[in-house]
Image 1 (cartoon, helix red, strand yellow):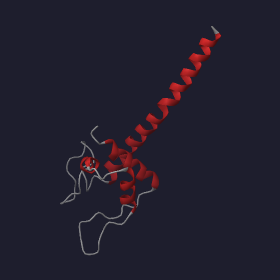
Image 2 (tube, rainbow, N blue to C red):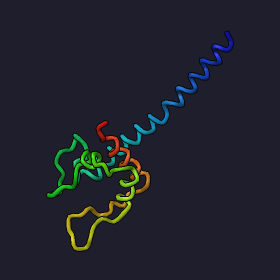
Image 3 (cartoon, rainbow, N blue to C red):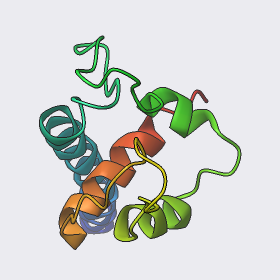
Image 4 (cartoon, rainbow, N blue to C red):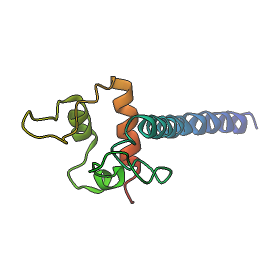
Length: 116
C-alpha cells in the first residue's frame, strides 16, 4: 500500500514539472503578441486585432513571415538584431533596437503563427 502512494507522488511530481515549459512558452507567446501589437503594428499586420498598418506600403504580415520556409528562430533573431536599411533604399525596415528578451518574445509569437 505504501508503494502506491510513492508511485502516485512520483507521477504527480512528473506531471507538475511537465506542464511548466508549456506555460512558460505560452507566456512568452502572449508577451510577444502584446509587444508586437504595440511596437510593430504601425508597419505590419501583427494579429487579427490589427488589420491596417499606418505605413503606406506596409511590411509583410507576421503570418506571412511565419509561413516562409526560411523562417526559423535563428533567422528571426539575426534579422531583428541587424540593421536593415540601405542608404539608397527608403522603405526598408530600420533596426528596431530590441532587447534580447523582446526579441525572444517576438520570435516566439511569430513562430506560434505557423499553421501546423
